[in-house]
Each structure stands twice: as structure tokens, then as C-alpha cells.
Amino acid sequence: MDAPSIKVDNDPESNNNALVEQFKQAVLVRSDHIHNGYFDTPKSNIVRGVDFNIAMGTNAVSHGELLDKIVSSYSNVGFQATNFGRAVEVVNKMISWKPDVQMIQDENENGGTKCTIFLGYTSNLVSSGLRENIRFLAQHSLIDVIVSTAGGVEEDLIKCLAPTYLGDFRMDGAALRKNGLNRIGNLLVPNDNYCRFEEWLLPILDTMLNEQNSENIMWSPSKIIARLGKEIDNEDSICYWAWKNNIPIYCPAITDGSLGDMLFFHSIKSPGLVIDIMDDIRGVNKSAMRAKCTGSIILGGGLVKHHISNANLMRNGADFAVYINTAQEFDGSDAGASPDEAVSW
Image 1 (cartoon, rainbow, N blue to C red):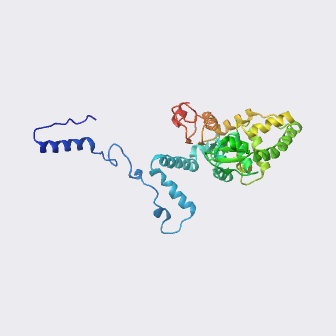
Image 2: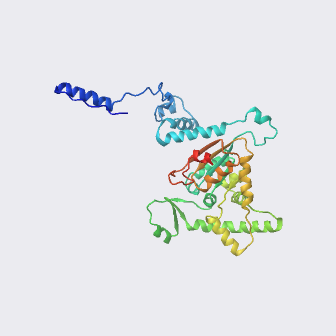
């Protein structure tokens, strides 16, 4: 918009009034009508936070109803709360999706009658208390396919053997190392936890090697994780519920963590265990290809994000997608890539 020109005459009072009017024109430009103008913005998009008086209501409500009211109001809060609210709306569409009549009648379709939901998450989420949220999803079969990192698997299992503690982001690394403590952000994991993990895991690997040799069982990362979920036999575990409910956990980088260390130690002591990664790439890709509808919920970036997106590429993309991470798009990283960039692939 061009700035208004300021005209000055010889009458001081007239000149001041003219200046004020011209400044008003420059500063207080009239707004278009947001509700009825070209913005075409509905009144429901007015910025507004949670009104707990309304959320609670005049009658007592259940915790679930209260949570639903609070979360549904996030779309109007602004900033990232609005994006979170939109993410909730997309996830609800995944949950409520139903095939149309043609899909049901098509004899060639065998992808089920619900949206196949892929959940990807990085290890730090399992190190934190968000592990319990993910465990709830697996326990109640609210997701169908999981992709995680080695840390996302081992941290879940290790927490069944010994706890993780709160620390501080500013704790000295050298001092912690001297005292046998590992820092994950502001969380602390004692070395003893990994020792317990080794004592628990190595005998299971011995058994798996014997089954490979005696029963010709070929182990893939997802089959190993399912076996560990069965063996941990702990209802606090994501892996346990995934095994219990037949939800595959794919981990293409299973050697990148403490699990890899244990596999390395075992290979020296008792060489011969073979892990077939090809079996898993077939499994995760076919999960997408056979589905009538797919949704991706990807918490974090890197490997889990690409692995899920690439599997859905086999069916020309997912129908729904939610990405939650702190990465930026400008560096060209996979973690920072927007859903629209993924569409281009």
C-alpha cells in the first residue's frame, strides 16, 4: 500500500488537524470484515483459551469428557496450540474413518474396515514419561503398526527392570560418567540398569540362537522385539502389549543402541544369530499396500519418519498424517520436511 503524502499549509491549527488525520490513515487503516469479507474466516476461529467454567459445566463431568472439552478448544488458542488442535482433528478422522460401500463390496480389497494407523516415535519419548501414553495406545489396540529406534525398544524394556530418574539439564557430564550415570536431557539412567538388561537379554538370545539352529526359525528385528515383549511379561511395557495384541514393532536400526551392544557381545560369545532385515521391509511395506486407508502419526524425525513415509509411498501416500517435532525445514533434513514436501516424493 502506498503511504499517504503529508501536505502542510500556513494555518498551524489546520495543519495539525490535517497531520492527525493523515497519520490516522497511515496507522489505523480500516480492516476488512473478517467474518464476511475476503478472509472468509468463520466465527469459530476467534482466538480464545479454555474457559474452565464452561469445561466443567454446572454438573459433574468425567475426566474423559473434561479432557475432550479442553483439547477440542486448543484449535482456537493460537500459536502451536492451534496446530496441536488441528492434529487432534486429523487423528480423530483416522479413528472415525470407514470404507465406502464400493470398498466393502470389492472382492479384491482385503485391507480391513478401518484406517491402518502407523505410529512412529524416537527413543527420548520412551525415556520420558510419555512411554505410558504410547503403552496405552498399544494396550488398547489404538494403533496398528509401530516404527521406533533401538532406544525406543530398549528403554521400554529396561524400565521394566529398573527405573529412570529425574536430573537436570546442567549436570556435569564428566562427573556423571565418573559416578556411572547416563544423562538423557534432564533424565538419569544408572549404568546398573544396562547391566540388568544384559543379564536379562543374553540368555534369551542364547535360546533364540538354539531355536534358529534346531527349528530353522529366521529372526527379523520385529520378531525379536515381539519375543522380548513376550519374555518381559510386564503390563507397563509397550513391547509387551504390542506382542499381546499382535502389533508389529519395526526397528530398522536395531543395532544402534544398547540392543546392538548386546547383540555384538553375544556374537563374540556365541556367534551365529542371523537377523533378517528383508523380512521386515516386506512386512512394513505390505502393511501400507494392503490397507484401504492409512494414517501416520510421527513423533520425532529421522529414521522413524522416513521409514513410515517410505512404506506409505508404496500406496502413493498416506490418507492422513500428523508430524510433531522441533526440526526446521530450512536445512533440508528429513525431520524438518513438511507434509507437502513428502507429497512431492
